[in-house]
Amino acid sequence: MSDEDYCTVVQAAKPPKADGPPYAECVLCREPTEYPESYKGITLCPVCEWQEAQRTAYSG
Ligand SMILES: [Zn+2]
Image (cartoon, rainbow, N blue to C red; front, side, top):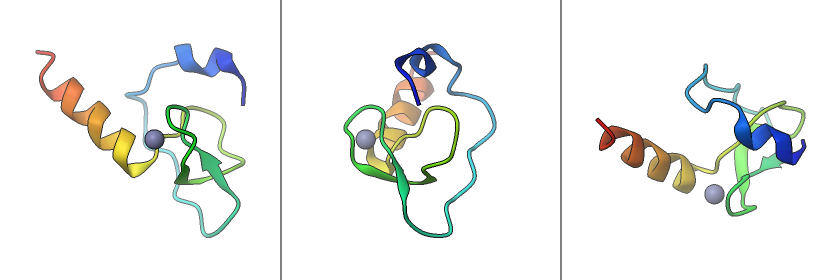
């Protein structure tokens, strides 16, 4: 994963849930997410994912 991934769209299809560790890090707070480490793209932990959802919900 690279910093360039920050610019990609978050609203794409949901990443797959990991069957087990290693998990990918949250791109915002570095907490482990529910997504596999091999996932290519933005991974958010449940907390940040919820916050992003709230922010998106109020932006319209
Ligand atoms: Zn997070």
